[in-house]
Image 1: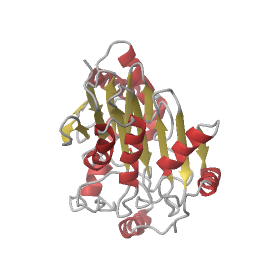
Image 2: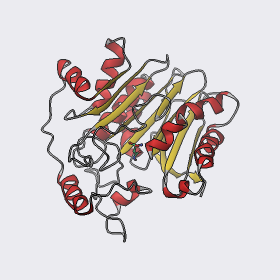
Image 3: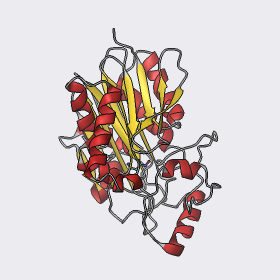
Image 4: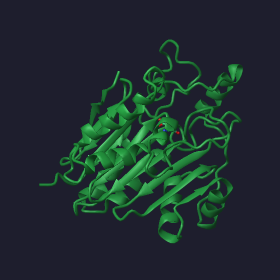
Length: 316
Ligand code: SD4
């Protein structure tokens, strides 16, 4: 029997995204609507770090990436999108009203404006402005393991110039959120939304908007999404790999583990320096996760509606 409906998000701030997805699922709504609501909930909080409140690129601009995918291989993505609050809804609009799947940069913004999305100011959030000012002192681009955790605990030693980002309700937050859901009709959908790696090169795009890297859904098999160092996920088409392992019989947990092992195998020494985490769900509603480093967690909400946070097992 399928365990449904059920929704899973990356990180403990999944409480917020799952909290927005659950009312849709509980009423028998579509997984696609649920994951869009999940993204909107985390993008809208400007005091935080997924959407426009996130850390800027090295030139001081916040640029957003997002993707959404439904149960029929329909997908939509935007990348390098500026001054638009809800990239996820732009991605969905692209998916549902055009023959395209992926828009980037100025063209993505133009499409958003043409479809009634308001142009925001582009001003940095106070936390991001502070972090950027501190970053400029050394101006080094160095990905930080579990930056998500460190942003939430800026007082811990060695954490560097990272915004002490928290959601308005005080919970920790992350610069990427991914959500995958199985609805009461037994259909899967997913989303991934991010401001990307802080202080990245201008124009840099991560895994989050790339279908098969940061997000993949095959309604016959399962769905997966990722967080962490996007470059490492892109190299192996990470979430597509997770779904293919599930197709070949792996449980969601085994599939995430095998995909992480693939990433580590390329250069086990270098893998000590970065974080990648996958979450996955299969058609039965079974859930799994795995990461390169300790510190990755995820939130599961099912019957009863109360989100539960789990620590993922890790390679190191
Ligand atoms: C990226 N995967 O842009 C994203 C970053 C991330 O939590 O997941 N941060 O590479």
